Image (tube, rainbow over all chains, first blue to last red):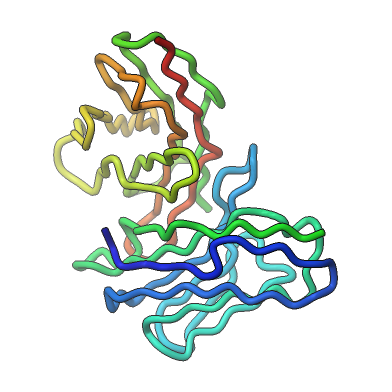
Length: 115
Length: 113
């Protein structure tokens, strides 16, 4: 298994509070991604990073911010959580070989409930 | 931008029967194609990938997929399914090595004893 961990694995929070999810890798991969998974929508890209301090927006970035100060950590912050952000969040990494963006390895997921 | 269509949201099939999960993508000069599987309450695991070369790709657990450029399809097949194949399957595509994967909405495969 690729060395990816996500914390916390489960979280319940209240509307309006800030929430930070952490993704940690031990593989030294360059690229890291945050997705959300919702029934009927599959996986949708929130933000991704192509290096330390280098990030870009995905399809559903509104209401989310990210930071990557070290190769191994990619943080996702919900600035003011809303019920529509109740979801399962997956982190992924890639970067082996010459095909940098291909073949992503996924973490176990974080189930977030916003009440 | 790339898009991926998984034509069936749910596929029920009896144990030991064959199955095909369909995936179509929007046209592009070159693409890289992937199938991932997600077992209940787990993350996604790579089943197989097409990067170049032979259009018939073999993956883990007896699955295979065929890349058809003219039909912009990458259907997943297994000749005989087992109860343990019950899971959700996702098709994904990228244009090149410089774009993140775009995922389909998934197909839930239910294998019936």
